[in-house]
Amino acid sequence: MRRILFVACLGLLISACSGGSEHREFISKKLQNSKKACLKTYGRFPITLPVAKSEPYDPLLNFFESIGYVKSLEAKQNINHDPSKPKDVVPVIQYSLTDRGAELADGYRICYGDLEVESIVGEETTPPIGGKVVKAVKFKYRLSNVKDWARNESVIDLSDQLYDHLS
Image (cartoon, rainbow, N blue to C red):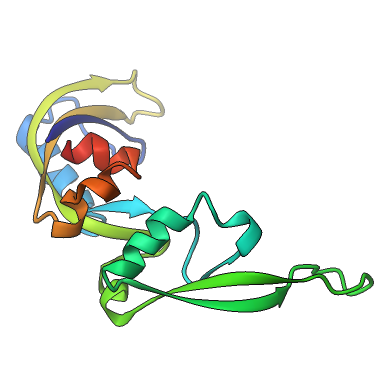
């Protein structure tokens, strides 16, 4: 699927004569640093959720567990962090990444493909500020090297982001 992204290159100082190939090179370099298409999870792993409040999060985390990226452990934990008050111990589920999941994880995201610049389709230039010009570049990108799990209908239905990219 191809989508159009808008990128405001705030730190980018380009002369007024810059061309599309220079934009493509700049964007490609930025994407190399974060060139992955990733699905946001609910926090940085390991994630601990009280069982009573885990229902909205269970489907996606359970899916990742079913494909071997995440493992879960049921435990009990004090959720009262104020030492002056009595303990409030509740059942929790602790989700952590497996070695396989850690290979695809990027902070609180699990990555499912690579982003590649396809074409530059437009740009907007701000009036010079302090002699410097800031440009916003509109470009098309494509998703490549998509993991098989990301094409699974059951997980696509759980994520608007996957739905937008892959349906």
